[in-house]
Length: 285
Image 1 (cartoon, rainbow, N blue to C red):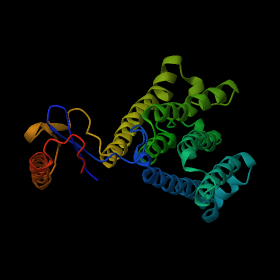
Image 2: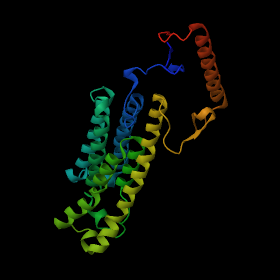
Image 3: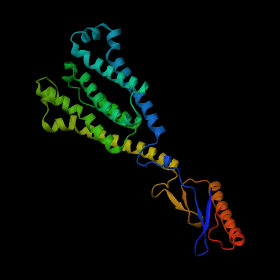
Image 4: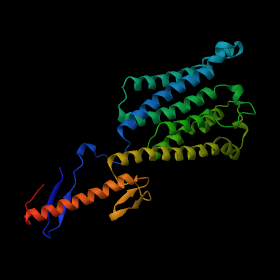
């Protein structure tokens, strides 16, 4: 109900509805439905992770003899891949069954991103022939996984940055561990500068791209939150309209016209109350 009262100066004051307390939340958080969508995307991403691991590691061994002989030669050739698949399926099932609350979806996703990256490195670096090959210089699947994760599962940009750094650190950490263990790799024959520009610097660029993507995706979510809560758009996204009102960019002329009609109606109501109320300060409508 619209509350109308007279001030001491005789001006009519229009008091709008108060927003229910349950609808006000911080603009820095994503809406609940977007968080539910993030949970669904995380579940799909976990299934995709397990599927890609199976197709890359076990399907060739099922179809071809030579990869099968190599895979069954030692548990190190298949154990990291199997553990990574089981981890991804566990995350997917927990989300599917609702065992992970919405508030824990983002932290769970970030932990899965980092652990999944180390799972990829463990699967890639257990092949000594591949590690010692001269052509083993370039991006790992960790780069693809990190970029895909930050875009599909939105989270706060700072947290996404920390998770991305922890994820891509699996490459230099894995190479350093193998080098310290005496495993013959291309990294063992590289100088400190070559090691940095081959296994550290490219993944720093991946972190930059992941951070920018995380800011864009999370910014879209917060804009949806502001729009639903009725708050003004951020700076630079509004312009002054008729009677000093702030109109959002892209606002339709119909909405602006309806606002003008509402102002006119409120003015007529105030005039009628002043005419029939006789200046009674206790008048309420």
